[in-house]
Image (cartoon, rainbow, N blue to C red; front, side):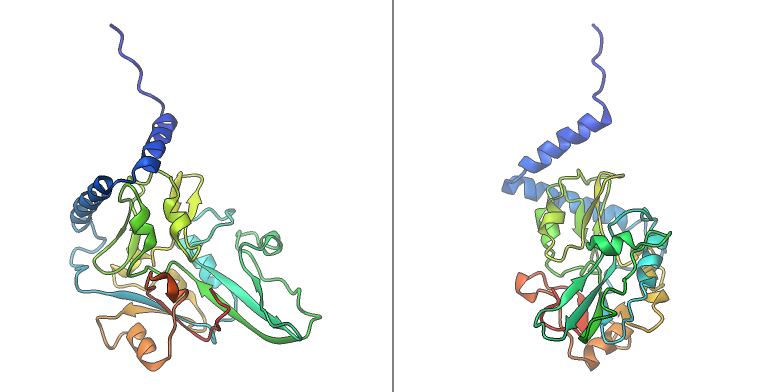
Amino acid sequence: MKRKKAPPKTERRAFLNMIGKTVVSAGAMLGAGSLLDKKEAASAQSFPTADYDWTKHRWAFGVDATRCIGCLRCAEACKAENGTNPDAHHFRTWVERYVYLEGEERARVDSQADPQNIAAAGAEGVYRFDNRYKDEKVDKAFFVPKICNHCTHPACVQVCPTGATYKTKDGVVLIDEKYCIGCEYCVQACPYGARFFNTETQTSEKCTWCYHRITKGLQPACVEVCPVGARIFGDRNDPASPISEFIRNNRVSVLKPETGNAPNCFYIGIDKEVQ
């Protein structure tokens, strides 16, 4: 009797995708939890630095919107560091421009989702802010850097049917591509629009706070290149760290606190219209 040929990888992925979209029972969620435990145990043995102890850190991010000048070096550094497709219109980190024109109560918001900004992208694929307001009377304008908030109660982790999206013991939310089936539940669940679907890998993707760098004692790439110190990163377990001082010395806020996700990215210099 002849053996049946194994189905192509694309068919297997489609089958797994279908399975993932039907896993809604409590038993399935428990299964995802046990998978996460195993994955965490394995990950603990494969950190970039052997002496890194993820139980001793509590990472957090700060953004000072009063300093950001919209130069977009952060987005360029992120793409270079993480190997993101330079032609993609998706970003692990991005900057939004809020402009209040004279006589208007609501801000005009420009971001990477704006086709005009994308059309003005440079050769490296990073969008540029245009000068569309040069002839307008501007009352107020400011830039708002955005990233994954690495929430304390991340909705993306709750909805992932396979445990591919998980939260580490040091507070960082990561995606294991080996377990991601491309169902995009996490993309839909994130209230901050911080996740996107990578059509090349057929998996979800997002900012990792450069986990491969911070576990070696380095700063995230976007923090390192910021020329004005608008991005702050550090360990909240260390009272002398930059992020601890930033939170202690400023009246910080988080985006969409009403969602209950409890973000770990803290802002100053933004108004209520920033979501």
